[in-house]
Length: 360
Image (cartoon, rainbow, N blue to C red; front, side, top):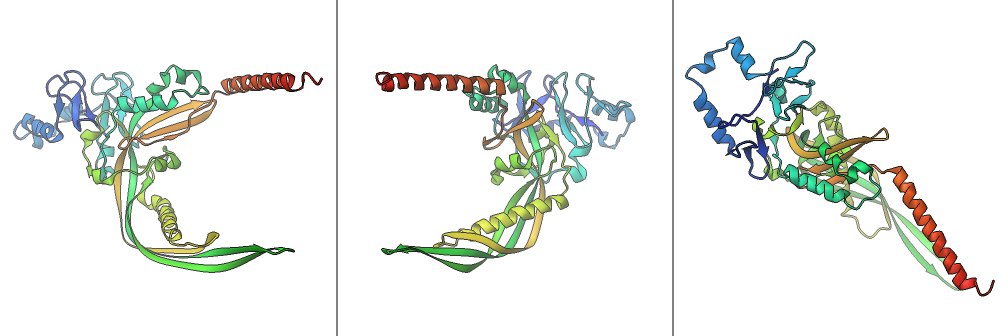
């Protein structure tokens, strides 16, 4: 398993994919490279017949050496990098360069499609900072902005499900009529069985393919604009961390079916009018022409542990939609609560004196 790192042809520094320009950018000399232009340059650099050579020393020069304890050496600085079996791209903790692991970015683990980042890192940090601004109950390190270092860009593995479906559902519904006379109030409740059936087409129903990511979080930052899907290019991973899926397509089907049922129920339920209550009784759904695609989708993730609890905050790396939960400093909470209670008590005392002082 080798590491691949994209280097600047001019100065040799590590390249990073820029969401703003959609090119590989060099933070050292400032040059930018189109993906196709960089591929052409790499082809020109190869000597005739090089593809036929397979010398062992060339493989070591191009990739990262593996240590006896299963770690890898960064091609840039030589430091050890931890990379488990699910890691596709990771960041060196010493030189901060991001490298791509060939084995988990190719073969059966190579995504069919992906959406490159559109939101720059600086923009994502500004969004998180603005969200936290004015929230006085956050822990101290949030108020001095040290938390921003925990914001990282991830390509999250997703399964995208397509199918044509036929849904049949029945609902228990009620209508209520009320009237009164001089003696009594009357309530008349009528019960109905309402059925609905419809054909519908589902396109790219997403299911998170990583156990590390909370499903509620990843589903809450939807939707993605799938018109921006593009062919997978390892160069897009430069500058971001990526894991391959550890939830396979077969396992993900369970969640996909649940989302299909919920969507179909919502659409059929919206066609029922004129009832006080509508409750689903039975539902069935059959699908055909089912297809599934493996995709990488961009997410800015913020994770922290506070008082033993894990908090996760996410920003859609394409649209900028934010969702998540942030910790609350309980000491600050009780401080403000006691302060408000004291102020309330003082106000009540003053009002009591003003209103009843003369009487007492």
